[in-house]
Length: 334
Image (cartoon, rainbow, N blue to C red; front, side):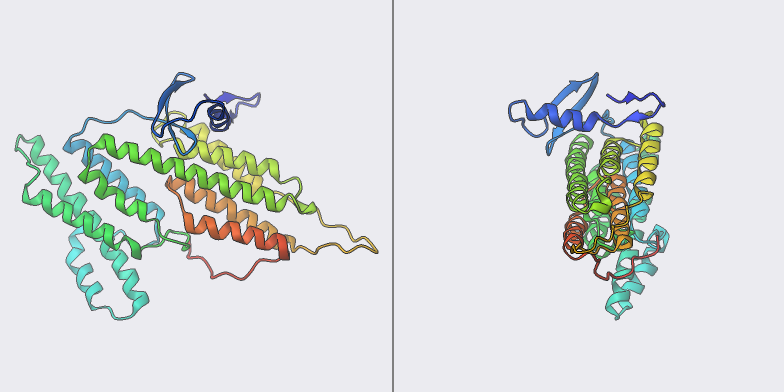
């Protein structure tokens, strides 16, 4: 699966190797599973994705899953949204009273955070009651209240931006509600679909960087560090934090990101009598680092960012044509 190089680093070849193998097979149905190199993988969106055991479907398993999804959500969204569930009434009152549209959006996002935390609080108590031998039925009033909180929070998710400030990630806001309302096995299968879509966007960004930058002499050597980073990012996308391989996987991603960010373009020579396109190399490096950051966001969230992906590809194409970057709004603080 992952092979070690002479210096002990993990060689990030598994995703590309598996993609190339699949191209020589008959067309595969989405969701096909196979044992490859001793590990079960599932086929979605052209990628063989590492699978993990599905927990037994129980209230306790759903509680752990919803708590993990809520933590992940707050980790990838703008700051200030992790409002305790005990302050739900305050958050709702403040949101309802706000008239300014920009402030209304932020307070709606804060209300969504409070709703998620309230749902988690309720679910935790239900699990405690079940552990004490009290039967919890699906139509229990607290179960219904938990579902209502998650559903309302999901609907408010459209008001929430990714931490980069570029777009929202609606998929993340819908995940806790899906984990609550469908069997765990079905939820996991849906996650593999999103991972395949995330890998596809990572490849699209990487190819846009290669196609547009390698046509510029100053950046002609940038292909190798881009491909190394893209492969490492796709492996990270399919790898859970609890996986024993995460230490090597994350170290490989971080060091590949450093090498790409430290790439030094060759200054373009001045040749008398020839017209040479003038490229702002500082703008070019800024664009490369923006692409690296966007791939990082997708790999860590394990979900696609279609708006940011589309706009980044357009910026790469614009830089190749003009040699300059258009001014963009300042991103939110990280």
